[in-house]
Length: 137
Image (cartoon, rainbow, N blue to C red; front, side):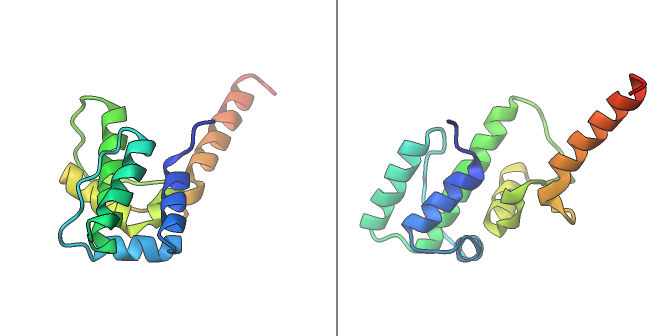
């Protein structure tokens, strides 16, 4: 089973004994984010533990994780130019550290719309409705 980004962040927050809200807020206070690879969750988790052992500040570790996830998300999209504004939807958009990371990685305005956690479900429902109407259902 593939775990999503939200699940990964939740797991890392638990590992650091933080709530997701604390995790996101801490990330916004980082001044020197830890370098963490985001292509593999096992490597990212290992790097996080290593940075803890090296004495990095917690806010720099959590923001390093956010930046790694942002880079990973953008690499999954592929080699396309993305310009702002960008609408960020889904549950991960609750995390202000991820909003900051995407803004910095893209160099673009990131907009988190109201009810962003429901937008995917609403879009899917609209597509089903359109198909039902078109097929005479």
